Length: 573
Image (cartoon, helix red, strand yellow):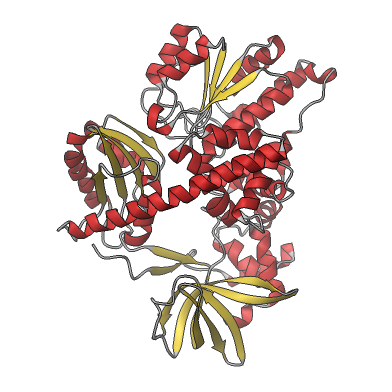
Protein backbone atom coordinates (compact mmCIF):
# COMPACT_ATOMS: atom_id res chain seq x y z
CA UNK A 1 0.00 0.00 0.00
CA UNK A 2 1.47 3.34 -1.09
CA UNK A 3 1.23 6.55 0.95
CA UNK A 4 -1.05 9.26 -0.40
CA UNK A 5 0.93 11.67 -2.59
CA UNK A 6 -1.86 13.66 -4.27
CA UNK A 7 -4.79 15.58 -2.85
CA UNK A 8 -7.85 17.14 -4.42
CA UNK A 9 -8.20 20.89 -4.04
CA UNK A 10 -11.82 21.95 -3.80
CA UNK A 11 -13.44 25.28 -2.87
CA UNK A 12 -15.73 25.16 0.16
CA UNK A 13 -18.41 26.83 -1.92
CA UNK A 14 -18.50 26.00 -5.61
CA UNK A 15 -19.73 29.52 -6.44
CA UNK A 16 -18.93 32.43 -4.18
CA UNK A 17 -21.12 35.41 -4.99
CA UNK A 18 -19.05 38.59 -4.96
CA UNK A 19 -22.10 40.71 -4.15
CA UNK A 20 -22.80 38.67 -1.01
CA UNK A 21 -19.21 38.99 0.14
CA UNK A 22 -19.28 42.75 -0.46
CA UNK A 23 -22.61 43.18 1.38
CA UNK A 24 -21.44 41.08 4.32
CA UNK A 25 -18.20 43.03 4.61
CA UNK A 26 -20.05 46.34 4.51
CA UNK A 27 -22.65 45.24 7.08
CA UNK A 28 -20.08 44.02 9.62
CA UNK A 29 -17.18 46.33 8.69
CA UNK A 30 -15.02 43.40 7.64
CA UNK A 31 -12.24 43.12 5.10
CA UNK A 32 -13.04 41.29 1.84
CA UNK A 33 -10.70 38.49 2.99
CA UNK A 34 -12.58 37.86 6.24
CA UNK A 35 -15.98 38.25 4.58
CA UNK A 36 -14.97 35.74 1.90
CA UNK A 37 -14.15 33.13 4.57
CA UNK A 38 -17.45 33.64 6.36
CA UNK A 39 -19.45 33.47 3.14
CA UNK A 40 -17.58 30.35 2.05
CA UNK A 41 -18.80 28.64 5.23
CA UNK A 42 -22.41 29.54 4.60
CA UNK A 43 -22.49 32.59 6.90
CA UNK A 44 -23.81 35.13 4.41
CA UNK A 45 -26.57 36.54 6.61
CA UNK A 46 -25.09 39.45 8.61
CA UNK A 47 -27.04 38.51 11.75
CA UNK A 48 -25.81 34.91 11.70
CA UNK A 49 -22.26 35.94 10.84
CA UNK A 50 -22.30 38.54 13.61
CA UNK A 51 -23.47 35.95 16.14
CA UNK A 52 -20.66 33.65 15.00
CA UNK A 53 -18.05 36.37 15.49
CA UNK A 54 -19.39 37.41 18.90
CA UNK A 55 -19.77 33.83 20.25
CA UNK A 56 -21.62 35.13 23.33
CA UNK A 57 -22.24 32.86 26.32
CA UNK A 58 -25.70 34.41 26.58
CA UNK A 59 -26.58 32.61 23.34
CA UNK A 60 -26.16 29.14 24.90
CA UNK A 61 -29.27 26.92 24.78
CA UNK A 62 -31.33 26.06 27.85
CA UNK A 63 -29.88 22.97 29.59
CA UNK A 64 -33.42 21.70 30.08
CA UNK A 65 -33.67 20.96 26.37
CA UNK A 66 -31.52 17.88 26.98
CA UNK A 67 -33.71 14.85 27.64
CA UNK A 68 -34.01 13.87 31.33
CA UNK A 69 -32.00 16.92 32.39
CA UNK A 70 -34.66 18.22 34.80
CA UNK A 71 -34.90 14.84 36.53
CA UNK A 72 -31.13 14.59 36.84
CA UNK A 73 -30.85 18.15 38.17
CA UNK A 74 -33.55 17.55 40.78
CA UNK A 75 -31.88 14.36 42.03
CA UNK A 76 -28.44 15.96 42.25
CA UNK A 77 -29.90 19.03 43.97
CA UNK A 78 -31.46 16.71 46.56
CA UNK A 79 -28.10 15.00 47.00
CA UNK A 80 -26.56 18.40 47.71
CA UNK A 81 -29.26 19.42 50.17
CA UNK A 82 -29.40 16.08 52.01
CA UNK A 83 -25.66 15.37 51.76
CA UNK A 84 -26.04 12.09 49.88
CA UNK A 85 -22.56 10.90 48.81
CA UNK A 86 -22.11 11.15 45.02
CA UNK A 87 -19.53 9.44 42.82
CA UNK A 88 -18.66 10.64 39.32
CA UNK A 89 -17.51 7.93 36.91
CA UNK A 90 -15.47 9.21 33.97
CA UNK A 91 -13.46 7.85 31.08
CA UNK A 92 -9.65 7.73 30.87
CA UNK A 93 -9.29 10.06 27.84
CA UNK A 94 -8.99 13.85 28.10
CA UNK A 95 -12.71 14.40 27.49
CA UNK A 96 -13.63 12.00 30.31
CA UNK A 97 -10.92 13.38 32.59
CA UNK A 98 -12.05 16.97 31.98
CA UNK A 99 -15.72 16.09 32.44
CA UNK A 100 -15.05 14.29 35.72
CA UNK A 101 -12.98 17.18 37.08
CA UNK A 102 -15.61 19.70 35.99
CA UNK A 103 -18.52 17.92 37.64
CA UNK A 104 -16.60 17.18 40.85
CA UNK A 105 -15.42 20.78 41.16
CA UNK A 106 -18.82 22.25 40.32
CA UNK A 107 -20.81 20.00 42.67
CA UNK A 108 -18.35 20.54 45.51
CA UNK A 109 -18.69 24.29 45.01
CA UNK A 110 -22.45 23.85 45.44
CA UNK A 111 -21.94 21.95 48.70
CA UNK A 112 -22.06 18.31 47.59
CA UNK A 113 -20.12 15.36 48.99
CA UNK A 114 -18.62 14.07 45.77
CA UNK A 115 -15.73 11.87 44.71
CA UNK A 116 -14.66 10.41 41.36
CA UNK A 117 -13.66 7.13 39.76
CA UNK A 118 -11.65 6.71 36.55
CA UNK A 119 -11.19 3.16 35.24
CA UNK A 120 -7.75 1.71 34.58
CA UNK A 121 -7.52 1.10 30.84
CA UNK A 122 -5.63 -2.19 31.09
CA UNK A 123 -7.53 -3.60 34.08
CA UNK A 124 -11.08 -2.25 33.83
CA UNK A 125 -11.55 -1.42 30.15
CA UNK A 126 -13.79 1.34 28.85
CA UNK A 127 -16.88 2.79 30.53
CA UNK A 128 -19.01 1.86 33.51
CA UNK A 129 -18.06 -1.46 35.04
CA UNK A 130 -19.87 -3.81 37.40
CA UNK A 131 -16.88 -3.89 39.76
CA UNK A 132 -16.78 -0.10 39.97
CA UNK A 133 -20.49 0.09 40.80
CA UNK A 134 -20.14 -2.56 43.51
CA UNK A 135 -17.19 -0.65 44.95
CA UNK A 136 -19.18 2.59 44.95
CA UNK A 137 -22.02 0.92 46.83
CA UNK A 138 -19.55 -0.56 49.33
CA UNK A 139 -18.12 2.93 49.94
CA UNK A 140 -21.59 4.16 50.88
CA UNK A 141 -22.42 6.08 47.72
CA UNK A 142 -26.10 6.73 47.00
CA UNK A 143 -25.79 8.22 43.55
CA UNK A 144 -23.46 7.55 40.60
CA UNK A 145 -23.13 9.96 37.67
CA UNK A 146 -21.32 8.87 34.52
CA UNK A 147 -19.58 11.38 32.27
CA UNK A 148 -18.43 10.67 28.70
CA UNK A 149 -19.55 7.04 28.99
CA UNK A 150 -22.47 4.75 29.86
CA UNK A 151 -24.80 4.98 26.87
CA UNK A 152 -24.25 1.26 26.16
CA UNK A 153 -24.15 0.11 29.81
CA UNK A 154 -27.38 -1.90 29.80
CA UNK A 155 -26.23 -4.66 32.16
CA UNK A 156 -24.40 -2.21 34.42
CA UNK A 157 -27.49 -0.02 34.78
CA UNK A 158 -29.49 -3.09 35.75
CA UNK A 159 -26.87 -3.93 38.38
CA UNK A 160 -26.94 -0.38 39.77
CA UNK A 161 -30.67 -0.73 40.37
CA UNK A 162 -30.14 -4.07 42.11
CA UNK A 163 -27.51 -2.47 44.34
CA UNK A 164 -29.85 0.39 45.26
CA UNK A 165 -27.76 2.98 43.45
CA UNK A 166 -29.43 5.83 41.62
CA UNK A 167 -27.67 6.16 38.26
CA UNK A 168 -27.47 9.25 36.04
CA UNK A 169 -25.81 8.60 32.68
CA UNK A 170 -24.37 11.51 30.69
CA UNK A 171 -22.71 10.70 27.40
CA UNK A 172 -22.27 11.98 23.85
CA UNK A 173 -21.46 8.78 21.96
CA UNK A 174 -23.87 7.22 19.47
CA UNK A 175 -26.69 5.41 21.34
CA UNK A 176 -27.28 1.71 20.60
CA UNK A 177 -30.74 0.34 19.87
CA UNK A 178 -31.15 -0.94 23.44
CA UNK A 179 -30.71 1.82 25.99
CA UNK A 180 -29.80 1.36 29.66
CA UNK A 181 -32.53 1.92 32.23
CA UNK A 182 -31.30 4.67 34.53
CA UNK A 183 -32.76 7.42 36.68
CA UNK A 184 -31.78 9.83 33.92
CA UNK A 185 -30.18 9.35 30.52
CA UNK A 186 -28.66 12.51 29.04
CA UNK A 187 -27.23 12.41 25.53
CA UNK A 188 -27.93 14.92 22.72
CA UNK A 189 -28.00 12.04 20.20
CA UNK A 190 -31.06 10.38 21.73
CA UNK A 191 -33.87 10.35 19.15
CA UNK A 192 -36.35 12.42 21.19
CA UNK A 193 -33.80 14.94 22.49
CA UNK A 194 -34.64 18.62 21.86
CA UNK A 195 -31.17 20.11 22.38
CA UNK A 196 -30.36 22.08 19.20
CA UNK A 197 -26.66 21.19 18.94
CA UNK A 198 -25.85 17.48 18.68
CA UNK A 199 -22.06 17.78 18.64
CA UNK A 200 -21.27 18.34 22.32
CA UNK A 201 -18.26 16.58 23.80
CA UNK A 202 -18.73 14.64 27.01
CA UNK A 203 -17.40 17.59 29.01
CA UNK A 204 -19.95 19.84 27.29
CA UNK A 205 -22.80 17.60 28.45
CA UNK A 206 -21.33 17.64 31.99
CA UNK A 207 -21.19 21.45 31.89
CA UNK A 208 -24.87 21.73 31.01
CA UNK A 209 -25.70 19.31 33.83
CA UNK A 210 -23.81 21.55 36.26
CA UNK A 211 -25.76 24.56 34.96
CA UNK A 212 -29.06 22.74 35.47
CA UNK A 213 -28.18 21.65 39.03
CA UNK A 214 -27.18 25.19 39.97
CA UNK A 215 -30.45 26.53 38.54
CA UNK A 216 -32.45 23.96 40.52
CA UNK A 217 -30.65 24.82 43.76
CA UNK A 218 -31.07 28.53 43.07
CA UNK A 219 -34.83 28.04 42.64
CA UNK A 220 -34.91 26.20 45.98
CA UNK A 221 -33.16 29.08 47.76
CA UNK A 222 -30.03 27.06 48.47
CA UNK A 223 -27.72 29.99 47.77
CA UNK A 224 -29.44 32.46 50.10
CA UNK A 225 -26.97 31.56 52.84
CA UNK A 226 -23.94 30.44 50.81
CA UNK A 227 -22.07 31.74 47.73
CA UNK A 228 -23.33 30.67 44.34
CA UNK A 229 -20.51 29.22 42.19
CA UNK A 230 -19.54 31.03 39.01
CA UNK A 231 -19.55 28.21 36.46
CA UNK A 232 -17.72 30.35 33.94
CA UNK A 233 -14.63 29.38 35.92
CA UNK A 234 -14.83 25.77 34.68
CA UNK A 235 -14.96 26.71 31.00
CA UNK A 236 -11.21 26.08 30.72
CA UNK A 237 -12.03 22.41 31.39
CA UNK A 238 -14.77 22.50 28.76
CA UNK A 239 -12.35 23.89 26.18
CA UNK A 240 -9.73 21.29 27.13
CA UNK A 241 -12.03 18.28 26.67
CA UNK A 242 -13.83 19.67 23.64
CA UNK A 243 -10.62 20.34 21.70
CA UNK A 244 -9.06 17.01 22.72
CA UNK A 245 -12.12 15.02 21.61
CA UNK A 246 -11.98 16.56 18.11
CA UNK A 247 -15.68 17.47 17.97
CA UNK A 248 -16.80 20.26 15.60
CA UNK A 249 -15.89 23.75 16.84
CA UNK A 250 -19.15 25.22 15.65
CA UNK A 251 -22.31 26.36 17.41
CA UNK A 252 -22.31 25.69 21.14
CA UNK A 253 -18.83 24.15 21.09
CA UNK A 254 -17.35 27.28 19.53
CA UNK A 255 -18.93 29.51 22.18
CA UNK A 256 -17.72 27.31 25.06
CA UNK A 257 -14.25 26.76 23.63
CA UNK A 258 -13.58 30.40 22.85
CA UNK A 259 -14.49 31.49 26.38
CA UNK A 260 -12.56 28.55 27.83
CA UNK A 261 -9.36 29.33 25.92
CA UNK A 262 -9.49 32.93 27.14
CA UNK A 263 -9.77 31.63 30.72
CA UNK A 264 -7.00 29.07 30.22
CA UNK A 265 -4.63 31.78 28.99
CA UNK A 266 -4.95 33.52 32.38
CA UNK A 267 -3.26 30.55 34.16
CA UNK A 268 -5.82 30.61 36.97
CA UNK A 269 -5.88 26.81 37.34
CA UNK A 270 -2.61 25.61 38.93
CA UNK A 271 -2.72 22.23 37.19
CA UNK A 272 -3.06 23.61 33.68
CA UNK A 273 -0.50 26.32 34.41
CA UNK A 274 2.01 23.66 35.53
CA UNK A 275 1.23 21.46 32.53
CA UNK A 276 1.69 24.43 30.22
CA UNK A 277 5.08 25.12 31.81
CA UNK A 278 6.45 21.56 31.46
CA UNK A 279 5.15 21.41 27.88
CA UNK A 280 6.79 24.73 26.96
CA UNK A 281 3.54 26.27 25.71
CA UNK A 282 3.91 30.00 25.15
CA UNK A 283 0.57 30.81 23.53
CA UNK A 284 -2.74 29.14 24.35
CA UNK A 285 -4.73 28.14 21.27
CA UNK A 286 -6.38 25.00 19.91
CA UNK A 287 -3.11 23.68 18.51
CA UNK A 288 -1.31 24.02 21.83
CA UNK A 289 -4.15 22.32 23.70
CA UNK A 290 -4.62 19.53 21.16
CA UNK A 291 -0.97 18.72 20.46
CA UNK A 292 0.89 19.67 23.65
CA UNK A 293 -1.39 19.70 26.70
CA UNK A 294 -3.90 16.97 25.82
CA UNK A 295 -1.31 14.28 24.96
CA UNK A 296 0.29 14.68 28.38
CA UNK A 297 -3.07 14.28 30.11
CA UNK A 298 -3.89 11.34 27.88
CA UNK A 299 -0.57 9.66 28.62
CA UNK A 300 -1.62 8.91 32.20
CA UNK A 301 -4.67 6.97 31.07
CA UNK A 302 -2.81 5.26 28.25
CA UNK A 303 0.02 3.88 30.36
CA UNK A 304 -0.84 4.26 34.04
CA UNK A 305 -3.73 5.78 36.03
CA UNK A 306 -5.78 8.63 34.57
CA UNK A 307 -6.89 9.60 38.08
CA UNK A 308 -3.60 11.52 38.37
CA UNK A 309 -4.74 13.78 35.55
CA UNK A 310 -8.04 14.49 37.33
CA UNK A 311 -6.14 15.35 40.51
CA UNK A 312 -3.95 17.71 38.48
CA UNK A 313 -7.01 19.57 37.19
CA UNK A 314 -8.60 19.77 40.65
CA UNK A 315 -5.63 20.72 42.83
CA UNK A 316 -5.21 24.23 44.14
CA UNK A 317 -1.66 23.54 45.35
CA UNK A 318 1.03 24.76 42.94
CA UNK A 319 3.68 22.35 44.27
CA UNK A 320 1.39 19.35 43.89
CA UNK A 321 0.44 20.55 40.41
CA UNK A 322 4.08 20.79 39.37
CA UNK A 323 4.84 17.28 40.66
CA UNK A 324 1.89 15.72 38.83
CA UNK A 325 2.62 17.68 35.65
CA UNK A 326 6.20 16.38 35.63
CA UNK A 327 4.90 12.84 36.19
CA UNK A 328 2.55 13.21 33.21
CA UNK A 329 5.33 14.66 31.08
CA UNK A 330 7.47 11.61 31.82
CA UNK A 331 4.53 9.34 30.94
CA UNK A 332 4.16 11.20 27.68
CA UNK A 333 7.80 10.66 26.72
CA UNK A 334 7.37 6.96 27.43
CA UNK A 335 4.17 6.97 25.38
CA UNK A 336 5.95 8.62 22.45
CA UNK A 337 8.63 5.92 22.41
CA UNK A 338 6.05 3.12 22.47
CA UNK A 339 4.00 4.88 19.78
CA UNK A 340 7.03 5.26 17.47
CA UNK A 341 7.87 1.57 17.80
CA UNK A 342 4.24 0.55 17.17
CA UNK A 343 4.00 2.80 14.11
CA UNK A 344 7.18 1.27 12.68
CA UNK A 345 5.85 -2.25 13.30
CA UNK A 346 2.52 -1.37 11.66
CA UNK A 347 4.31 -0.08 8.55
CA UNK A 348 6.32 -3.30 8.40
CA UNK A 349 3.14 -5.36 8.65
CA UNK A 350 1.55 -3.33 5.85
CA UNK A 351 4.60 -3.84 3.63
CA UNK A 352 4.28 -7.61 4.15
CA UNK A 353 0.64 -7.71 3.03
CA UNK A 354 0.09 -8.55 -0.61
CA UNK A 355 -3.12 -6.54 -0.89
CA UNK A 356 -2.30 -3.15 -2.47
CA UNK A 357 -5.89 -2.45 -3.54
CA UNK A 358 -7.47 -2.52 -0.09
CA UNK A 359 -9.89 0.23 0.92
CA UNK A 360 -9.23 -0.26 4.64
CA UNK A 361 -6.45 -1.20 7.06
CA UNK A 362 -6.97 -3.83 9.78
CA UNK A 363 -3.93 -5.02 11.73
CA UNK A 364 -3.63 -7.03 14.94
CA UNK A 365 -0.52 -7.79 16.97
CA UNK A 366 0.35 -9.21 20.38
CA UNK A 367 3.26 -6.74 20.75
CA UNK A 368 1.05 -3.66 20.80
CA UNK A 369 0.01 -1.61 23.82
CA UNK A 370 -3.73 -0.83 23.76
CA UNK A 371 -3.03 2.66 25.08
CA UNK A 372 -1.26 3.89 21.94
CA UNK A 373 -2.97 2.09 19.05
CA UNK A 374 -5.53 4.89 18.61
CA UNK A 375 -2.77 7.44 18.02
CA UNK A 376 -0.99 5.10 15.62
CA UNK A 377 -4.25 4.45 13.75
CA UNK A 378 -4.62 8.21 13.27
CA UNK A 379 -1.09 8.42 11.83
CA UNK A 380 -1.86 5.59 9.40
CA UNK A 381 -5.05 7.35 8.29
CA UNK A 382 -3.03 10.51 7.69
CA UNK A 383 -0.47 8.62 5.61
CA UNK A 384 -2.72 6.26 3.62
CA UNK A 385 -6.20 7.87 3.84
CA UNK A 386 -7.96 4.61 4.64
CA UNK A 387 -10.30 3.69 7.54
CA UNK A 388 -7.96 1.99 9.98
CA UNK A 389 -8.42 -0.47 12.83
CA UNK A 390 -5.49 -1.50 15.02
CA UNK A 391 -5.99 -4.34 17.50
CA UNK A 392 -3.83 -5.14 20.52
CA UNK A 393 -4.00 -8.88 21.22
CA UNK A 394 -3.48 -10.45 24.62
CA UNK A 395 -4.39 -13.95 25.83
CA UNK A 396 -6.77 -14.61 22.97
CA UNK A 397 -8.64 -11.31 23.25
CA UNK A 398 -8.30 -8.12 21.23
CA UNK A 399 -8.89 -4.45 22.08
CA UNK A 400 -9.14 -2.28 18.99
CA UNK A 401 -9.06 1.42 18.17
CA UNK A 402 -10.43 2.67 14.87
CA UNK A 403 -10.08 5.98 12.99
CA UNK A 404 -11.79 7.00 9.78
CA UNK A 405 -11.99 9.38 6.82
CA UNK A 406 -14.69 11.56 5.30
CA UNK A 407 -17.54 9.48 3.92
CA UNK A 408 -17.00 6.43 6.12
CA UNK A 409 -19.06 6.54 9.33
CA UNK A 410 -17.15 4.28 11.70
CA UNK A 411 -19.94 3.57 14.16
CA UNK A 412 -22.31 2.59 11.37
CA UNK A 413 -19.60 0.46 9.75
CA UNK A 414 -18.99 -1.38 13.02
CA UNK A 415 -22.72 -1.99 13.32
CA UNK A 416 -22.47 -3.80 9.97
CA UNK A 417 -19.66 -5.92 11.46
CA UNK A 418 -21.25 -6.47 14.88
CA UNK A 419 -21.58 -10.25 14.48
CA UNK A 420 -17.77 -10.45 14.51
CA UNK A 421 -17.40 -8.25 17.60
CA UNK A 422 -17.95 -8.65 21.32
CA UNK A 423 -18.53 -4.92 21.79
CA UNK A 424 -18.00 -1.52 20.17
CA UNK A 425 -18.82 2.15 20.53
CA UNK A 426 -17.78 5.58 19.36
CA UNK A 427 -18.37 8.28 16.76
CA UNK A 428 -18.25 8.90 13.04
CA UNK A 429 -14.46 9.26 12.96
CA UNK A 430 -13.24 7.40 16.07
CA UNK A 431 -14.35 4.20 17.77
CA UNK A 432 -13.25 1.37 20.02
CA UNK A 433 -14.04 -2.33 19.83
CA UNK A 434 -13.38 -5.68 21.48
CA UNK A 435 -13.26 -9.12 19.89
CA UNK A 436 -11.67 -12.51 20.36
CA UNK A 437 -8.42 -13.28 18.54
CA UNK A 438 -10.07 -15.88 16.32
CA UNK A 439 -12.57 -13.23 15.10
CA UNK A 440 -9.90 -10.91 13.70
CA UNK A 441 -9.74 -12.51 10.26
CA UNK A 442 -13.51 -12.59 9.74
CA UNK A 443 -13.87 -9.03 11.08
CA UNK A 444 -11.14 -7.88 8.69
CA UNK A 445 -12.97 -9.39 5.73
CA UNK A 446 -16.34 -7.91 6.70
CA UNK A 447 -14.87 -4.47 7.44
CA UNK A 448 -13.08 -4.44 4.09
CA UNK A 449 -16.32 -5.38 2.32
CA UNK A 450 -18.06 -2.39 3.93
CA UNK A 451 -15.17 -0.14 2.89
CA UNK A 452 -15.39 -1.38 -0.71
CA UNK A 453 -19.14 -0.79 -0.70
CA UNK A 454 -18.98 2.74 0.72
CA UNK A 455 -15.73 4.16 -0.70
CA UNK A 456 -14.92 4.69 -4.37
CA UNK A 457 -11.58 5.86 -5.82
CA UNK A 458 -12.52 9.52 -5.43
CA UNK A 459 -13.36 9.06 -1.75
CA UNK A 460 -9.96 7.43 -1.18
CA UNK A 461 -8.23 10.59 -2.39
CA UNK A 462 -8.08 13.16 0.42
CA UNK A 463 -9.76 16.52 -0.10
CA UNK A 464 -8.31 19.88 0.80
CA UNK A 465 -11.10 22.43 0.99
CA UNK A 466 -10.05 26.03 0.48
CA UNK A 467 -11.69 29.43 0.84
CA UNK A 468 -11.20 30.54 -2.73
CA UNK A 469 -8.53 31.79 -5.11
CA UNK A 470 -6.79 35.07 -4.29
CA UNK A 471 -3.75 37.09 -5.31
CA UNK A 472 -0.89 37.72 -2.91
CA UNK A 473 -2.05 41.33 -2.68
CA UNK A 474 -5.10 40.10 -0.70
CA UNK A 475 -2.83 39.36 2.26
CA UNK A 476 -2.49 42.88 3.65
CA UNK A 477 -1.28 42.77 7.23
CA UNK A 478 -4.40 44.36 8.75
CA UNK A 479 -6.68 41.98 6.82
CA UNK A 480 -4.67 38.92 7.84
CA UNK A 481 -4.77 40.04 11.49
CA UNK A 482 -8.55 40.34 11.25
CA UNK A 483 -8.86 36.60 10.48
CA UNK A 484 -8.07 35.89 14.14
CA UNK A 485 -11.68 36.89 14.90
CA UNK A 486 -12.76 33.61 13.29
CA UNK A 487 -10.85 31.51 15.87
CA UNK A 488 -10.87 29.08 17.59
CA UNK A 489 -10.02 26.87 14.63
CA UNK A 490 -10.58 23.13 14.49
CA UNK A 491 -13.00 20.55 13.06
CA UNK A 492 -15.98 22.28 11.48
CA UNK A 493 -14.18 25.64 11.60
CA UNK A 494 -10.73 25.05 10.07
CA UNK A 495 -8.12 27.75 9.65
CA UNK A 496 -8.67 29.89 6.54
CA UNK A 497 -6.97 28.29 3.54
CA UNK A 498 -6.55 30.12 0.23
CA UNK A 499 -5.42 29.10 -3.22
CA UNK A 500 -2.77 31.21 -4.96
CA UNK A 501 -2.06 30.34 -8.62
CA UNK A 502 0.98 31.07 -10.75
CA UNK A 503 3.26 32.53 -8.09
CA UNK A 504 7.02 32.35 -8.62
CA UNK A 505 8.81 29.95 -6.26
CA UNK A 506 12.08 31.54 -5.05
CA UNK A 507 14.97 31.15 -2.58
CA UNK A 508 14.13 27.79 -1.00
CA UNK A 509 16.16 26.59 1.97
CA UNK A 510 15.79 23.75 4.48
CA UNK A 511 15.38 24.69 8.15
CA UNK A 512 15.12 22.42 11.17
CA UNK A 513 14.79 18.72 10.42
CA UNK A 514 12.64 18.81 7.30
CA UNK A 515 10.98 22.22 7.03
CA UNK A 516 11.12 24.40 3.93
CA UNK A 517 11.36 28.17 3.84
CA UNK A 518 10.96 30.04 0.57
CA UNK A 519 9.46 33.14 -1.07
CA UNK A 520 6.39 33.43 -3.30
CA UNK A 521 6.32 36.34 -5.72
CA UNK A 522 3.60 37.84 -7.89
CA UNK A 523 4.64 40.91 -9.84
CA UNK A 524 6.46 43.17 -7.37
CA UNK A 525 5.08 41.59 -4.20
CA UNK A 526 7.03 38.83 -2.46
CA UNK A 527 5.95 37.07 0.78
CA UNK A 528 7.92 34.67 3.00
CA UNK A 529 6.57 31.12 3.35
CA UNK A 530 7.09 28.13 5.62
CA UNK A 531 6.08 24.54 4.82
CA UNK A 532 6.50 22.15 7.74
CA UNK A 533 7.90 18.72 6.96
CA UNK A 534 8.05 19.40 3.22
CA UNK A 535 11.75 19.89 2.42
CA UNK A 536 12.24 16.39 1.01
CA UNK A 537 8.82 16.23 -0.65
CA UNK A 538 9.22 19.45 -2.65
CA UNK A 539 12.90 19.17 -3.46
CA UNK A 540 13.63 20.38 -6.97
CA UNK A 541 10.55 22.62 -7.34
CA UNK A 542 11.24 25.53 -9.72
CA UNK A 543 9.41 28.24 -11.59
CA UNK A 544 5.72 29.03 -11.12
CA UNK A 545 3.60 27.11 -8.62
CA UNK A 546 0.06 26.91 -7.29
CA UNK A 547 -0.22 26.72 -3.50
CA UNK A 548 -2.75 26.27 -0.72
CA UNK A 549 -1.72 28.51 2.15
CA UNK A 550 -2.86 29.97 5.45
CA UNK A 551 -1.76 33.57 6.03
CA UNK A 552 -0.59 34.41 9.53
CA UNK A 553 1.06 37.21 11.47
CA UNK A 554 4.67 36.34 12.27
CA UNK A 555 6.05 38.03 15.39
CA UNK A 556 9.82 38.25 15.70
CA UNK A 557 11.92 40.56 17.88
CA UNK A 558 9.04 42.97 18.41
CA UNK A 559 8.16 43.21 14.71
CA UNK A 560 5.09 41.84 12.94
CA UNK A 561 4.82 40.75 9.33
CA UNK A 562 2.73 38.49 7.11
CA UNK A 563 3.95 34.94 6.55
CA UNK A 564 2.24 32.18 4.56
CA UNK A 565 2.05 28.68 6.00
CA UNK A 566 1.91 26.50 2.89
CA UNK A 567 -0.13 23.29 3.22
CA UNK A 568 0.20 21.96 -0.35
CA UNK A 569 2.03 22.94 -3.53
CA UNK A 570 1.95 22.02 -7.22
CA UNK A 571 3.90 23.12 -10.21
CA UNK A 572 1.76 25.54 -12.20
CA UNK A 573 0.31 24.18 -15.42
